[in-house]
Every structure is written in structure tokens, then in C-alpha cells.
Image 1 (cartoon, one colour):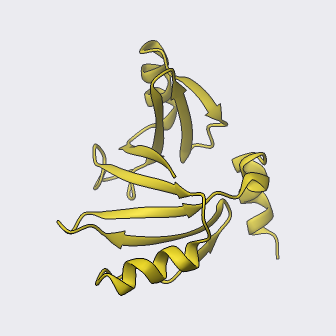
Image 2 (cartoon, rainbow, N blue to C red):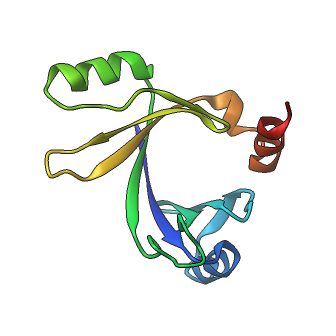
Amino acid sequence: MRITPIRYVRDIEKSNRFYAMLGLTEQAATSGTWAELHGEGGGLGLHIAATPSTHLDAGAVSLQFTSDEKLEPLAERLAAAGFEPSAIIDETFGRYFTVADPDGYVLQVNDADEELRNISYETLESAALKP
């Protein structure tokens, strides 16, 4: 299982340049909505705020986990323990579900789909927009 903290920001490019000055390097192409940065001690995802014009969630941080096991048994195990994972959702970057931890903080759990990790975000997004 890998974990990625995600900082919600107003401007991906400006934030990317700022974190580069701190020593992080971009691993996944900046798309205007997402950038994946890595440093020697870990990584950081940058995601555009839900409503950039009002910056409703700008500054928030969430946690994203990438599971090495299939999502279905993991979601079933969480549900059996009394947690309530969302339905598994298919996105351009892969599959995921969300679940609240014991304090009510929602986190996201992704499939570790290595085939999709090697495809640029722009290619995934453009493919998803085709009929």
C-alpha cells in the first residue's frame, strides 16, 4: 500500500513551481488539474480545488492510498468491520472507492493499475472524452 497526501490548490502550475523550489520533482505531467510530485522522502499530489473560482477547498489536504490488492476484498473487509466504503468508481486514472476513518475523515483508495500509471493524464482525459 502506498500513500499520497494531496494538497488542494488554486493554481497547479504556481504550486508546482513552489514545491520544486523545495526539492520535489514532477513525476506525472501537470494537466492543469493534477500534478504528482516526488522527493527523496515521499511524494505529494497537487489537485485543483473543487471550485477554483471560489477556492472552496483550497488548502485542504486529503489522503489517497494505492492498494496492492484488489479493491473488492478490501472494501468487503472494511464493510465487515463496520465502515461504509462507497461503491467502486471507474475513472480515467483507474478504479477507487472512498471511506471515512474512525474520526470521519474521508480518504480515497485506488487500484494499483500499473498499465494506467504509464499513460499520461492528458491521454487518459482525452480518451475519456471520446464517445
